[in-house]
Image (cartoon, rainbow, N blue to C red; front, top):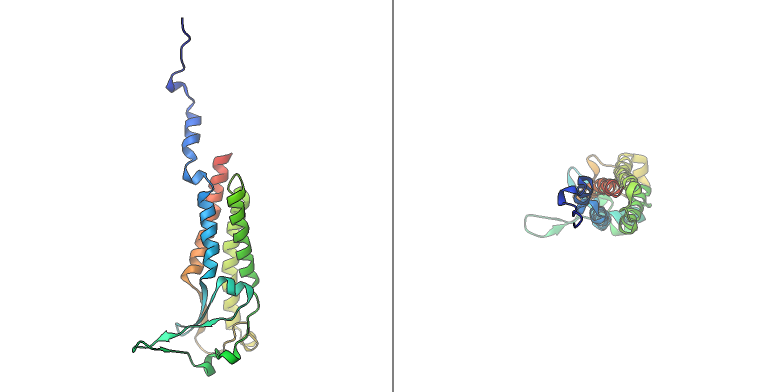
Length: 202
């Protein structure tokens, strides 16, 4: 008599569930992609200096990190031509421009993003707990960067010798761009994906 073959129903359900749970979110692809896009967003305008809601100048995430000049925003008039903001009032004359100091929070966010990307790509568990911590810290660093820029623009003493090089006038503010806020969301998502990856790999 031939030995009875194990039926399909005898396969443990737990192994089937484990295999099913390791879908796309059980791989390193989501966390790697989130970190990669977040890092690439640093090459786009990250923050804008505005006067009464009108943009005066902008800077990329990399520019804020390494301390490059803020670029004056040219606003188009109703006839299609461009005009610049008053250089006397806003101190954006080319001869008056000065480089801002590197922003430590932007450096931290960019550095953490690169480290998170390398871990998500190379680590067998997609970064695991380290990816969670790095993603959260990178998002917090970006928020701290914006608060740091806002505090500088509000301080009359720091504006006179300032990194941002604008006069202290009513209505001058600093705010993040869409790329900035999207980068924060991506860093948070990268942390979530890293946690999911480490959970399914255990």
